[in-house]
Image 1 (cartoon, rainbow, N blue to C red):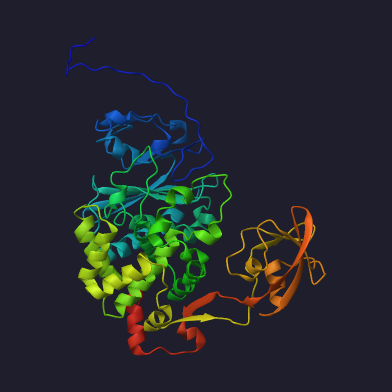
Image 2 (image 1 turned 120 degrees about the vertical axis):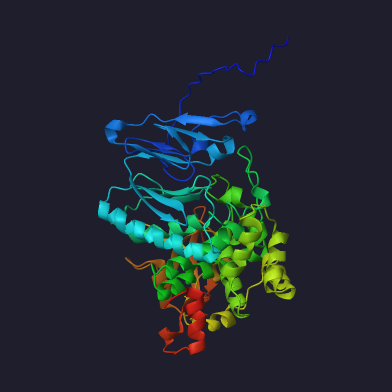
Length: 509
């Protein structure tokens, strides 16, 4: 049977469905209660994939009794009605309905807005927005220009309330920022890093776009081998931008490198996967849920962290040649971002060859991207007057142990490959009941207790596994952790050349 086609005829379908709100007000889920309607579009609306090219209109019925307003990157039509050119843009447009404060400023004939859902004062909002402005300006300097936002504006959708969940999620002309920390409760300093990270994405990932994510598939897992660059290099700039914007000190920035540095370079996971292969695991680790027992402590390094320390190494290696990562990012922006031509890993390799020379570019990719070698950080840090050191007198056990209520020590995670605990055959959920025949002293944590010993000390350990008592011997080793700090902390006075190199790196006065 066939039906006559009439292009002027419209058919309306009224469809009603129940939306179950979650307790996670973040960058993925929807949360609706009397404080707000926090709407991530894929988690809120049903859709017809075959109609993905059709224009969409959406009207929000807001709680006027609660003084709610609409904040979104969707173009405004009238009243509380908004539009999207197609399904893709609609899905990419989170929306916050709440009694939020609005701040905005004009930069390069575009408007940057802050829609702030926070219980604080107007003065708190003003102070925080000044920090946001500094971040925006500092990041613009990296790339030389702002992206051209599709409707002339960019909106930070910040929800800092106790019922939210900590998160950040970038979108083309906006970003979701959520935290349980209100501005008056640590958020003034603690939340600005997410602002830095997510706004950097308006260049790096929203427009400098991996070909593997273009177009994004809303029905399947999206795997990309470029996340070490898209997320990792963005993570490198996150705190560097805060330092350049004078929101944290150079000392705090440099010492803050320590945790990520140790996590990456002391991980046994590099023997299994390179940064590209770590990136492929995103569907399994980035807020994905699973009940499978895994051994990611030994087999996975976050591509955020891995890419961050590689971005640091590349920046300092380029500065050794009187070049810098900022200018390389500008080149990538002009080649693939401003033009919105999706890139591949091979494209990044060729761009680095073009910027720094074929030998340099190929060496970086062959050694650190296609393989998992460690850059020569000791030499690179010296260029900017930074010390990298280890304390060989500190003992190392190799497992996270918590003291239970009955004063035993339970191993909380898989023991690290190659560590003393691993070599002794200890494993997750083993319960240490005695060391040298004695229980743990009351009121002391395991990591403090273990410092009473020295590297090479032998510990006779009694432990329970599956209710059965066993014994083993752990030979302590030197702590492999590094400390990173400015040379001045050691009483070293850097030369004028080194101080200039540091100033150029951190953009400090």
